[in-house]
Every structure is written in C-alpha cells, then in structure tokens.
Length: 428
Ligand SMILES: [Zn+2]
Image (cartoon, rainbow, N blue to C red):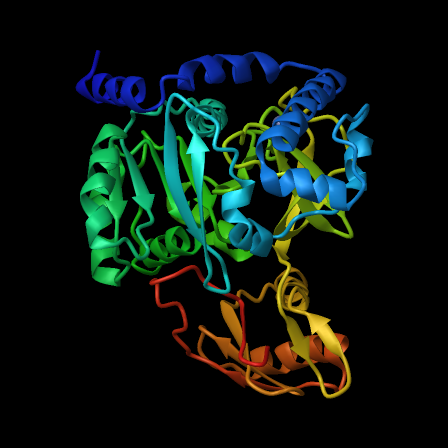
C-alpha cells in the first residue's frame, strides 16, 4: 500500500468511520431504477420528519403553524410545507438543532452572499455520506481519493484554522493553492504533470488555463483524469480555454455546505442528483432541497437560492436513472432596478450567454448598480468597438430604455479574496 493511501485510510478511520459503508451503498444504488430511488427517498423523508417533529423545536412549531402533518404518504405531500430560507436557518439556529446524541459531530460554518454566516453541527453520518457522494462521483473518472491533486481554494482562511487545514490537506494528498497571482499559477505548471485531478473554484482553473494558452505551453498530462469545478458558475467560454490547455473539459459538482452535494456530473456529461442524500424539488424555477441525512440540523424544503432546470429526459448514456440537473442558471438574487421596472439579476446571465452563443464573444463581466435606472458593466477584456456595440444591443433587448448602461473595458474586478460575483447592488 502506498504511503498516500495508508495516510488517507487512517484519516478516514479516525474522522469518518461511516464513509466506506455509505460509499458501498452509493455504488449499489447507482444501479437502482428511478422508482426504487424515490421509494427510498420517501422512507427517509418520513424518518426525517418524525425526528424533526420530535427533536427540533423550530420544526415542531413550524409544522403546527402551517397545519402540516409530518406523517406523509407520498413525496408530493411534502409540498404542503412552505420552504425555509437561509435567514431562518440563521435566526432560528438553536431551535432547529435536534440536540440528539451522535457518536461524532463537526462544526460547520458557511458564509452567505450577503455576508451573514450560517453555523451548524453536522453529524458524522451526514458528513460521511456527503464525502461518499463526492467519492462516488470521482469513481466515475477512476479517481482514487488518495491520489495527488491540486485544490484551488483557500479564500479567507483564518490563521487559527491554517494548521487544521494543512493536516486535512496532507491526509488527502492535496496541494492547496492560496494565492492566484500569475507568478504563483506559473509555478504550478510543473506540478501539474504529476497530478491526477484538480478541483476548486472554476474561475481560478479558468485563469490557469488562460495563462497556459497565452504562453503557448503544450501540456502533457498523462496522469490527469478529472478537472472539477465547484462553487462558482462554469461559463461556456471557460470550457473552451480549459479544453485547449488540459485536453479535457471541466466537470461540475454542485452543492452547498448546508445542503450537501446535490449533483455530480457523470462521464456522459449529465449532472445526476445525489438522490440518496437529498430530495430535490423545483418551484418557479428555484431549487428546493431537503437534506435526507442531516439529522443534527434538519434542513427541510430549503431554498438553496439558485435557479435550476431539471432535464426532461430520463435516460443517460452512463446507465444511471438518477434525476439530471440540466442547468444551474444562477443565484436567485437581488433585483436590477430600471427607472420604471425591476429585473432579476439572472437577466445578466442571459445577456452574456447570448453574446457567447450568437457571436462567440467571451466576456468576463461584473455589473454594479449604484442608482436606479443605470448600470455599470465592467468587462475584463480590452475595448473593442464591435464588442461594446453588441453588448449594448443585447442589453437593450431585455431592459429597453429603462436602464442606461455604461460599459468599461480592461477592468480587474476579481480580487480572488472571495467568490466571483456577477452582480453587486448598492441599492437594497
Ligand atoms: Zn449519466
């Protein structure tokens, strides 16, 4: 056994004793038919609702307030319960926790887009099931968890947590990239040759790919099996650069700390929902997640805050029948205000998607609104007459004359100190 493998397995035994049982379960259920998966989900939701009713003061009151009977007979029955928001998870935090005894639990914190922090305790089985979902996804690419990998992450790691982070990195044979200056990324190029997979923020992996392409470096990466983007939107033009630099596309892992891994892209290119761990619903285009494994901090009908689209087709070339998320469209976000009307910030996604698919224009953008009726459009790429003209035309289609835009080229808005945002509002 290699040292990396032994180290990894020792770490798992200590930290996540339930990991491999759940992984084996997921490898079995990946062959289940859709009907059987839904039956399993119903059984688990029933269990979860009873735990919540009995041990979570918040849910007990919430069910009562909305006349909801936690003894359900079908997955549809669950729809009678109104969704909960992140604000509720934060403000009702203590009352949501079940305070049950678990063999082990982990303290988690995650920051929201508007700056508030959500903290919660994750029971060991939840943590292990979540990790197992990642391992299963990676198994579709023949990636073994102890293989050497580069991790593009590390935004805002507090000094007090650095040692712990470093230990976890060693256990997982993980080389973590903390800073994203071109010099640092250049130094990575040598390291890539021995890497089995890379993962992390898609905007950063994209920057690395661009750097390699600009310098016309030809990469030989015989060991590379997977490039996985997480946490940020993977724009279509990212794929083009990444493919050119590394010879393969970036696959997508979609989830959130409180919701767990919601979906993982298979080798046939479809994002399969982790139906064993989460129950997913879509209402008015918005994703609603029930976390089936979160018994320490129940998350039931939670508005995760993204617009998504489920695929209509129920077959996949990989053979799995798990539901497929066709597209994660973007954050349910703030509004863009015109003089007369307001528009969802998601509109920006359509504007730039059109520019790419119609004209092949690859713009990295960020829009900032300081006052109603006007919008500043920052573009990373250098100025071009034609570019500006097409941006204006595309914006007009959605906003007419309700919003005046100013387009500024050659802007560096990605600070790499936090996730890349496509819209910042200073109005609300
Ligand atoms: Zn598939």
